[in-house]
Length: 216
Length: 161
Image 1 (cartoon, rainbow over the protein chains, first blue to last red):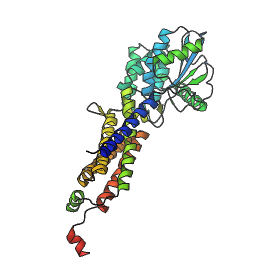
Image 2 (image 1 turned 180 degrees about the horizontal axis):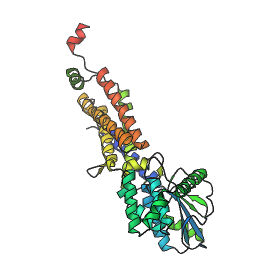
Image 3 (image 1 turned 90 degrees about the vertical axis):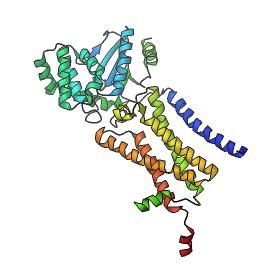
Image 4 (image 1 turned 90 degrees about the horizontal axis):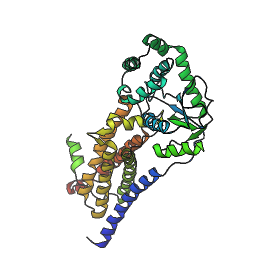
């Protein structure tokens, strides 16, 4: 093999290596540009809220129970909430319905129906923890699965069923999604820290840093 | 069937270098696209959910085959095509080119299968997968063009002209 051919092949391998290296570097570069979104509505009594009322940091999450990314962030937000006394967490529904998440609205209905009996967060935990179980089910089977969760949470099943199908619950979910759309939200989860949209941080540590800085 | 066999097995001659370089560039784009998804898969990054549903495709049961990410298979597929085309440019051995050109045909069948899955089973589309399918289709068109246009015509055939 002469020198020219060796250089030819080395150049080829370098090009391939540069492509892979460039992709890895570009993907590891943190995105810092803040998304241009509106300011979410004030936290009201009908919102689902955890944490002290006077907490210096309010984290509002627009989320979808069937969204895999929301499930991934569920764990992160749980960690944040457990490790901080400065944090108030607000969950708002933003179901991507009918596609790509056909069971997202009924999951939200289940959470709202549980919320009417004071167990929104318990149902929220069950829905995210078991997302893989119900996400691919037919609508009917998913509804049955949610009823099983309601039974596990010792809810009044009759009231749960009534609330699950109530127009008030459906309208609340729709209103939440409409509000999110009016802010310019295009995907889930979308987080607002003290009213300002943030780029979803990759993992617990960078997220904790944002919360800690906002608390100062 | 016999015509197809002849088309696939007959020797090639005077293949346009520019066309092979163009195919190599397209294959490199395919490699970049598939490698992006492979890196994302191994980094455990789940893209945000949007109405497009890319994350549904990338986290579906069809995103891996026997534990191997489809994106990685795509990277290897495009890498083999790149190596094959590059080896042809280096050696000018048409046997290498002919062997390499079978890959896009297999890839095209694979792309049709994954588009079917996205459209009718997963019911969501991932733009990166669609780009890959487009690149694979383009490579297949180039392959078929090369097979038809640049075959080595037998002497007797030439004499009859």
